[in-house]
Image (cartoon, rainbow, N blue to C red; front, side, top):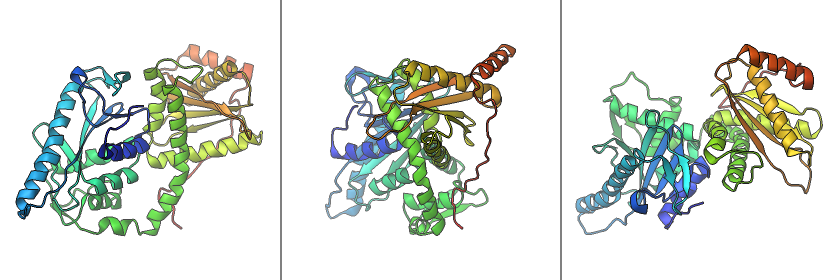
Length: 402
């Protein structure tokens, strides 16, 4: 993987990599004539996040207004220029080019891509009022070190982060007046307190200077963070399979862009849904290890994607395992007519001291035909897959306080 070249870029890349994972994160990608396109690029169709990082030391000339303007010009205007230039280049390019010149993921087609512009201005020491908005060619979000770290720690999935950026842009496009007495993280606190939205019935919103600190003290917020620990099981699955894809370690897979379809769908699940998915996968593996079940299915409440989990004995033939996984995904597609996409994940039953491997299947059937149904009936009769599945309803509160 490509690496950032200085400490400021390293700071931003590490946060982005943790939130958006290795398959979709690029440090110092190349543009025209192999020049740097931007500092960090996130590509997870349909979203593209262009990030420019500037670390400019705030000078002390004795005239604070002059110092502020000089810092803003170097830290923000420089990033804005780079971002707009990168966006123009992306719109005429088919693929990401990594810093080493190798080809990364394909850019989303122009009719679906959504570009988000982010500038991270370091070195102001929280002394300079941060400016953000439309600088002439589209809205640019500007964060300092604290706000960027706080927001990506809180909204650490592509879906949650992009939704915040979009809602914030819509807020300012609406013409509503916003008065800042606090910081960006306080605006985030206001957003979370209002169930991740900005209310319509106001003319002026005043962002206080202690909203975020009050939010994180609330018992329901602490309960959410504790419950969210299960969600990182899903992140671990994503990262492990991503590494296998990037290192060509998947035994049965096509090219990078085809393999990425399944993982992209998994990565676009928001944090709360990942909690449900992660908990379900953990419980499945516990039961499978006890030889109580071989497979489990689950439908995402967010995406309506059906997931199929399969665990086989260690050392069992991988070709047989992937064939069974494909078959079970096909059966699941027929049993759940509202789920057009089915994703299958297979691995070994856990054994101390043994390694593990993954297989992944992405099945997208928009239309279910009579011929498909005949195949379904044959497969169920022949192999008994999901003939009499036990169904369990699960309830989960995002803020699970008594």
